[in-house]
Length: 283
Image 1: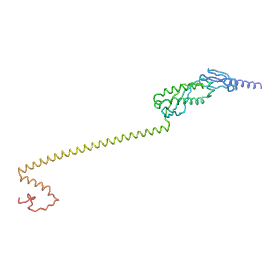
Image 2 (image 1 turned 120 degrees about the vertical axis):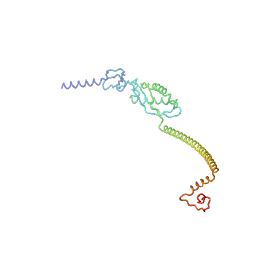
Image 3 (image 1 turned 30 degrees about the horizontal axis):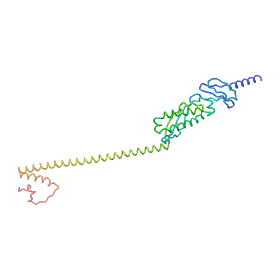
Image 4 (image 1 turned 90 degrees about the vertical axis):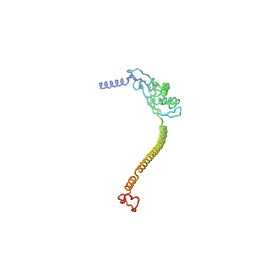
């Protein structure tokens, strides 16, 4: 029985000692609470002791923490709505003040969201849309980080950096802008098509004009050449007739017979017809 009691006593002592010891790591700070009230702040790493049951320990990170905020709408100076998506980096510099004000990291993130978006609304409200998107984003975020750090100090937090991840237009405004862009592109396309049709009509008209001129000139040349040929032909015939009128008549008659007296042609003429003069046996 004495041995059992001794063992139980040793177990209780070991359990009591283990529950009274705690370790603070290099990346942590701690606040010792006694009956839910702050008793001691520990910022140096090492092994420490506390009163079991009566005292509890809350640990806080010394490392750089991140806060990815949900997107929210912000109004610019030229009355344009922007959907801002940002993130921030912060440290817990005063664990006691942090515990008394926001208590947990989730509470800190919620409070930082309010602070950051409040500063974003103020700062972006002094700039036009094109400035925020193109030239002044870095200056804006530097000022927001500075002002947010001043307010976050009340909660034992130091703001290291605030940055924008994305800048978008709200869906309803984006759709309206896209529709205007689509309409503008369609208008430009119609202008190009109209200009193309106009240019096509001009080219066709010019081509038809040149075609008409070419045909007229070709017909003129044709008639000129044909007239010259007929003149030369007439001249040759006249010269031939003057040299031997009888032979000329004979040739002309033969040509007429060739053209008119075909196998499938029937001609009714009198025997003394002048046309049959060279076919008459008496001649």
